[in-house]
Amino acid sequence: MKQFTSVQDVANLQELVNEALQLKQNPYKHKQLGENKTLGLIFLNPSLRTRLSTQKAAINLGMNVMVMNLDKEGWALETQEGAIMNGTTVEHIKEAAAVMGQYCDILGIRSFPKLQNREEDYSEELLQQFIKYSKIPVVSLESATRHPLQSLADLITITENKTAGKKPKVVLTWAPHIKPIPQCVANSFAEWMRKADVELVITHPEGYELSDEFTAGATVTTNQQEALEDADFVYVKNWSSYNDYGQVLTEGEGWMLTEEKLQRSNNAKVMHCLPVRRNVELSDEILDGSNSLVLEQANNRTFAAQAVLKRMLESLDQA
Ligand code: AN0
Ligand code: CP
Image (cartoon, rainbow, N blue to C red; front, side, top):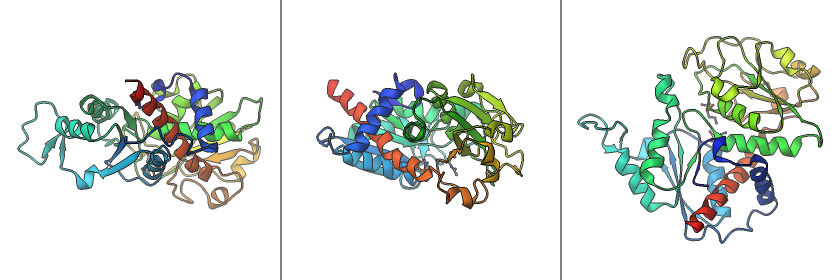
């Protein structure tokens, strides 16, 4: 595996999930694989889970890890081709990424969308430039449009918790939030679930349609209660508008998931990628209840990252 930026980078989802589940059983089995190999983690935005779980995954594989909070600790980065750098930017991504590519064997990068210009965000320019100029394998730690390590951990969690022999009904439901939030987690979850063996239903208020690129083939409805009927898994997430780009269109009154709303589900398990704003996105009763999978999802982030890093290390060895 040369890069991990979307579901397109995975030929067989089930094989990768199985590999992650094996690593979960035996995390230190491949401790030699990463010997003398360095993972560089670059953050342009905050993180708790991605940062620590990816670090832990690399350590389990015997790698060294270097973490850089590029937005705070690095030189202000220029990304425009041909820029005359007489303003606030100090270093061009061409040099910055190339230098990090020399110090590391694999790079991870987190770079959220700015939510101001849709074409710019959806072009994934920063991620693509890191891939181009670092010349080494790159893992997305959440880019402008996707969060594939989260989606892999979510698929692992669903695989562990589903009823054998039954295709699960998985509902992605929009939740309220007080700030404009990226579409990444929702986009990514939708594109992974469409490739997985599940029935996917997406529900959100009018105006929150995600790009077809991620949702084509899924059932989409603005009727949350109808969507929740017979659900086996309910994935809760806020996102800002894609059509009215980056805008918060409604306070979303009535959209917060509660126990009462789940009564007509199939005793659904509830998922959220975290961080979660309690009693805004999800009620205390659900988060503290026995059907919540949020901590299992967070735990599986380690094994998702470990499966991906293992594949990348194996392809380095073949190079
Ligand atoms: C980010 C998002 O939804 O993309 C990161 C989640 C993993 N969340 C927030 O900005 C609150
Ligand atoms: N779920 C997730 O990616 O969390 P962090 O933003 O804390 O990394």
